[in-house]
Image (cartoon, rainbow over all chains, first blue to last red):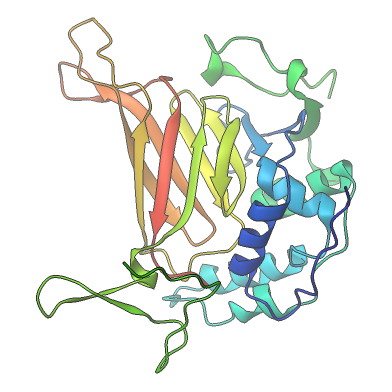
Length: 155
Length: 138
């Protein structure tokens, strides 16, 4: 059964998440984002896993704010005199984004939760540092977890 | 016995602040006592269930993080972690535990490991982890 998203612009994002928790089934994604941080060249590859409840919100549409809102808050937080967010209203008052496909949601998630230095100017990097893959493409055990790197030949 | 059936409780003086009468003359603020995010996830970053979480990061052995959908207001919130299976590793080292690392308004880092006989924290992949966050939302 399809459920219609209420008009959420101007409603606190927190309230929307409660509505989603009550009304939407979580969606487990098979997608994984594997990435390497250029500021930590010796660190192993990291893996970002979408949250099922968040993905349900993304697929439903009309709940999540545009990803640019998170960038604005990150800019505020990066200022040396940052103490507390004063533009949190951007999360709640900006028109929510429409429903996404799962692939679009993963792209949104990359831009939200992975540092911009990883994916901005991606094509200018001298090595592949971000890959979207399926869960089954990851190593099946974690014995050498801290040695994980992106395979440059298949990426 | 009275039964209260309502959808919303809102403060009269300040909409976002409701006091609950506590011990003696003490008032407990309802909003300050509520968890603003929580998650249960395994060492692969696979989330079982959650609230206010957009993703989990598997950053390496015993090195994890969770990202919030609704940012916290600042970096001074409280994050409490736990591990679902507090077992001894059987080699003379201490119990496995979870600790909170860097806190940002949009994420918190969680480490898992144990301290060895030289009191050095060793990152370790143990069992599923739990995290609960209290503080002010953006």
